[in-house]
Image (cartoon, rainbow, N blue to C red; front, side, top):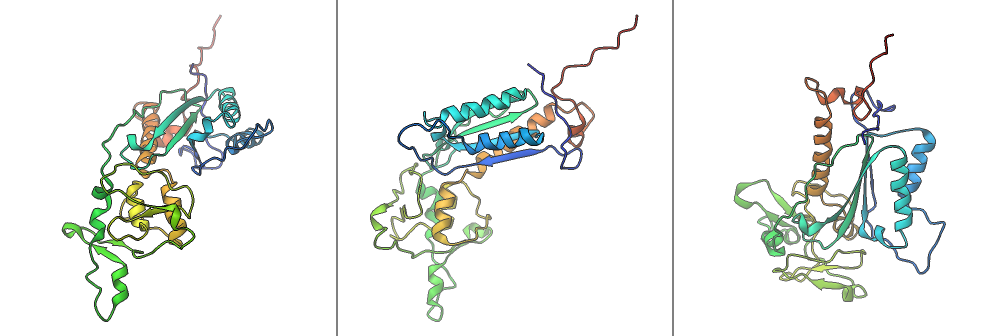
Length: 290
């Protein structure tokens, strides 16, 4: 079926595809009993788009695997049905993070919808996951700026591997508060998978320093590059990073969307003309001449 019709976005300049991203990576709470009036935020967003007659070229929805639980599945199915009613193609994928080289046991459900009825050129990826030691073991080096006059500098580990860009591992030496300590586990350096940290008072301890994993160490485990800058309190950042959608997989989705744009752009035209093309519609018939 190729009945979808891509219209120029209303609130962006012509030629720029409109991509809406809805990400809800926090774990879903499974409540007792069923609530027939419960609607997922995704369904509410689609209803608002329909009411405003606004449209998009691509909708990307990232949700935890709990979305497929019997308590949430009816609402998710209604959201998919609403997209199909708009004559949009809908692709739903189960994304297990370890399959993409991420040492986090979390699984997400990714939905991609578009008025372009096209295959989603994002093949399943099965990458070898490195051990935790391979990922963060080099961050245990000492800070050469620490000395007798500046002893606190030792709390911020400095790393310059093979003359590359400096990597700062700030925040070492932090210990869990006494009430939170039972909720912390020591990371196994030889392990390749850790369970996701779901709450800010649950976390991981470094196996040799015996302190809480730093923001930079959590970021490496979750696939963030070393040049990514974080702002905020360490305790909240650690929880947010481990619960976030890994950048390498997000990049794969973006690349898949770019490939769809390239595939459906007419020969001789660049992607800037994308919004002006009827990419999914049926060819117009010739005018009948009697």
